[in-house]
Length: 400
Image (cartoon, rainbow, N blue to C red; front, side, top):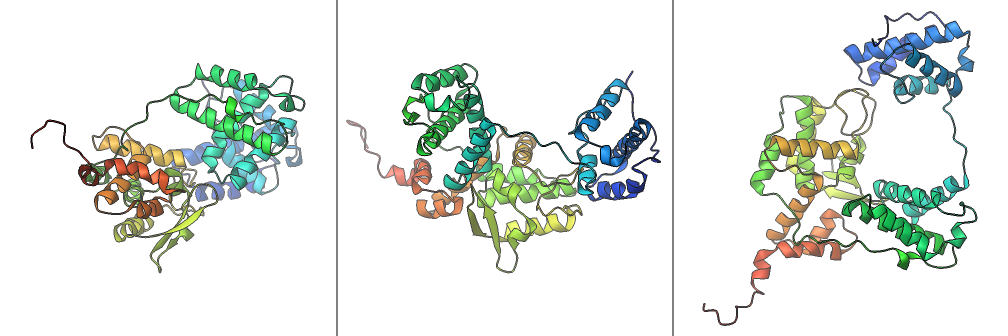
């Protein structure tokens, strides 16, 4: 039989902070059962501290782990990890009543931090890409033999190819693209910083894949179905409609939508500041329909909270949407519209394809999509059927 938290009783060391914790929860958007559950957790910690004879100053990470163990042993079924206690620990940390554990730094951690800074500052990569490369680097370096510290300088091509080939038996094409790209980035970093005396990037095998001939886009009818599928009588529907309108009109990436803050909308100038990959920032014109959708969201959909992110979660805690959440709502909207499930990038392809068909140049499309090079945008030339038709030669022997 599982156990739930009993009614709140706070009369121990945390009693004086009870009202402040409730206010903290309300600010995060907790209501009803969610609020009651967090208050019950607060009361349980208070009772546990009192029974153990511990003062607030003695609420250390090790003491917190003992508290969690007592919950597990007591038959509790929720909030059994430090992550489950996040709202409570954030509150206590803000009051300087709790200090989270600080992991000790190792040689591997130090090297990975240097690599991370290189990816962000020298390469200008986005945080999502950098995290993927770091994951590859950590796994590779942790497997180095002899151990890191003496092993990096002794790396040979067989170490590289052996690691990549071993991963190829576990991952698909998309995953292996990240592996080989991450390995090349790491090996270039090790060589340019002098940690290895030879450039091992040529030892990274390539990933064979069939390249798609055409960028996949949606028809105008499908885009309309995607937008009309949002129930704009609800706050979530108003929010999702605003996000989908942004994606369909400006071709933003999911991470760029998630990164928009309230201050990024310049209503007077009719512009939107967009934080792209790495440290790049751009200002894009704000179309009228996008502005209308954002105004409707701010007036009728966005919950009251202290968070400065533009798009907010629909449930507590009230935080800004993540890149993954933006992708999830687009996929949900495509299913709702009766389309094949797809992510935000399909709308980015749609924007570029429609602009090209309307006569925009590749340079203009590259500026809107904020590509680093027009050569990336050149992929869309394949969908310009009107321009390509003039290059078609008659089949030998065919009659016109």
